[in-house]
Image 1 (cartoon, rainbow, N blue to C red):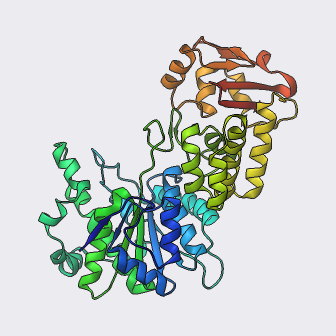
Image 2 (cartoon, rainbow, N blue to C red):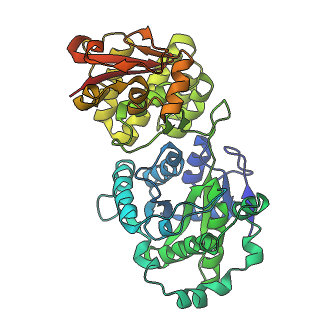
Image 3 (tube, rainbow, N blue to C red):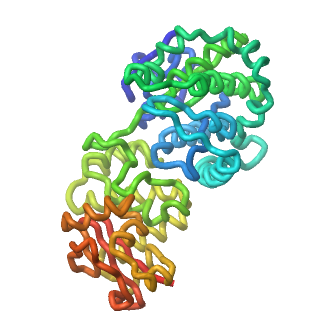
Length: 425
């Protein structure tokens, strides 16, 4: 198997397919299998392509936007996406680049997680019509496989020697952390997914994060043994200009599901993008023409702040819909202009919280400004919190009805970039 490591945006030779041209230009390509063969196949006509998401949480997060934006572009360019929700593989847990095993989930929790993930995916990808994208659950075939049949049909195609060469396995072993047989079998299950999707739906391309490279290669090779020509493509791991992993904040992951992070909270995350990250994020996470991205990337100062609002509104529109994006923009404009009277609350908390001796630390956690009370304490003691415009540096501070201002609301700010207007009801 020929593997190509390609610097994003710089293929070694001219490309024939519009799909790969667009993906390279947007910075959405990290690695591919046999680039020339994949390019030829994409140029010949529509390809069925899949990306899989295990249901390890009740929502996807912004880290998943890279493969989802790739699938979205491929669909716009005439190819057919399949989104695989891992009702089967989630029962095992992907060990890729983790120092310890994932907690095993009950089937009821997996089903609930899938329901939440489905809602986000259906906003990003078009599943309507006979030629629309497909949404499938790999439990449909994996739970039907009997253990001895699985070993007989697939076990001989995988060698331990080969599997141990993949970075996802090597990293665990080099850290002298245990790797269970259950986890070791995960890459076999994902390979079977690819083969099964090829048999059922003619799928010939898998898209995944860079940590999925070994799993994708296994699927490509398993397909070859079945007489099928399959291809793989990974997207880069995105880090911010500061070197931090994209989507990790003091309050935790930036979720896509509105019940886990409000559309305004999501919008505010993008509005607070560091200056140096704006050009790249416009390219990766919006569908603005590249000529417009280049123009916007040259702006500085107050104009750059407007570009950040544009970035936030475009990404929020893709993930939550145009109405939610417009509403978030209006909330942001009113809130950051100081027009609290006309701004709508960004958070509405139960009135009982106020009546039950609500602490400042609890308030910071409830609004998503901190992931835990200890995180909130560090924020407060560092002098970065303001309540109703005044510095609040006492972690023992309690919130009462006397703190409520106009329209029975209070304003909460963490640093210069994060602000909330909290109502109780």
